[in-house]
Amino acid sequence: MAKRIRMLPSRNMSTRLALYLFIMNSFILIVSSAAGYKFTSTVIKKNTAYYAEHYIGSMNNELNFYFRDVDLMTASLFYMSKNLFSGLDNYTRRLELGEDLDGLRNGRDYIEDILVLNNDLQAAGTMPIVMDQLLRADIYRRVMGSDGELVVSPIGYPTFVQDPSKANRPVLFAGRKIISESNRIEGIIIVTLPAERITDIVKKGEKRYDERLFLVDRHGILMEPASIGELPHDGEEMLKEAGGELPSFTRYGHMIVTGNNRQTQPLNIVGIIPEKALLKDAAAILNLQLVMNFALLVIGMTLALVLAYRFLRPVVRLAHFMRTVGNQQLVPYQTRGNKDEIGYLILSFNRMIRRLKRSFRRIHDEREKQKKAELRALQAQINPHFIYNTLNNVRWLARMGQSESIFDILTSMNIILVSAFQLEKPIITIEEELKHLDAYLAIQTMIHPGKFDVVYDLEESIRSGPIARMSLQPLVENAIFHGVLPKNEPGQIRIKGWVELDHVILQVADSGVGTVKDASRDDTRSEMREHVGMRNVDKRIKLYFGNQYGVNWSSERNVGTTVTVSLPIKESFLRGNDA
Image (cartoon, rainbow, N blue to C red; front, side, top):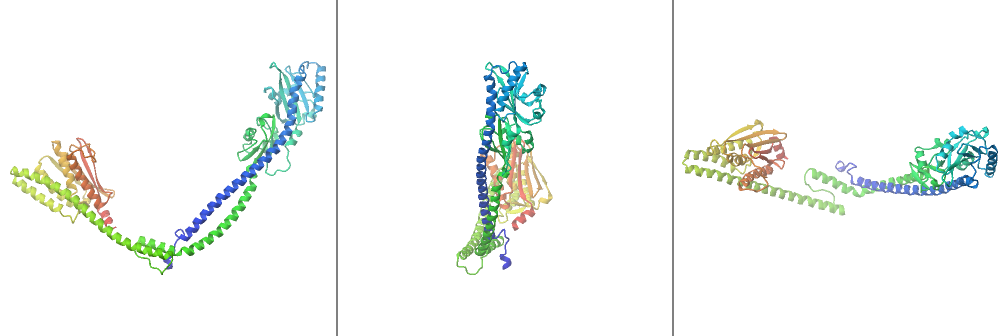
């Protein structure tokens, strides 16, 4: 008994119940953890973005305080002195302008030097320069390519300064092209700022989230070349996208923070924070939550499995017995008296078994009766049609006084009728069916001499195969009366048979007039009689052998008609009957 009720875990009801609960709770756990992680991540990112925006915004405000002053100073120099760029070929004039510019520089400790250059490449400023070096400098090219706005150039060395102590000290370059009200270029002004004064603003002591700060211009170009190696993958694309309407955004797995609109300032500080580092706290919280929830889930599912097996064990036994019954035979379930819901279920099952047994017997008997009645009706439909045609021909022979022909016809007709009315044996061999067909063809040959000839082409192996009685005669009759005779010239009827896969194929082909009519349409009485015979044979074959067998036909006008009969081979038919 223990062996009988033993079941595989995948089939055990209690195991499946516990498994379903485990999957359901696991799904809820995963969804809730994912939602919690997303919520926590969103809050952390929002808070970080909020503080980073204000922090970097304050640094940008400090940075741009210098550049607003530089911007104002470079723009106002020309308007305060209309002859700013004139007379620079005079040494005295250059000294005076240099002293004025030196006074401006001394009042601003964040300015290193100021240089004025006119269109004739005559310069004056707070330091002597090498003109060839200046013309090759990046700041000169940027200023000349601008439209008069303040531009900056990356931190570097002022190689155009003659003083070696200054030429070897890194600075940040700023400058602008001076354009008069008449849209005439008057000259350029270049200002250098100590690099450490700018980079000190960017430097930050503690880095909680591995954040990195970069100094860029309004086009996203790094102003501190040494920082290029610190850029993450796709960092240059991030810097170019920074400075839009959003003070912060996420791209390429990083949070990019500017704190303000970079397009309004010549220089800006951009912060890049890796999201992985940003969310490490959220990931730690998630991992702890998952471990605790999974431990509780395992404990809960273990208890659920024990309880489920305790209460569902009778149901499991009944289910196993029901599978056995379904695979073998209908027998009632024998068990001890259970007076709970399980006992009521067993009682209902046993009642159902008894009702099913009675129903199956009744259905089987009714099906057999129905099948026999339908087969008799179909057989009866064939017999009167054949008898009517034959007697009609005998009547005309009798009028013509051909008594010997009438005797031969009636002899053959007797053979056919004896076979046709043996309803208790509806299945015969193909060999027997061909003998009855020969008797029918003997009648038709006598009635229609010289009108047609019949050719047999059958494999010997199929002659012992099964066929429904009187199946070929209606098909050959159609070939004679609806195919060959209407052609008004001699024709041929070919009867072929062969084995194809697991089917026996019989084919009746004539060289008659053919047709293009659809067999499903009742166009004429002649065609109705022709199709009734084929439908009758098709229905009887399907009733005997199954819907995979039956009759198909094809026809072509003035070429002929081919009727194909599909039958089981002898072995497969016997196996089907045994089953």
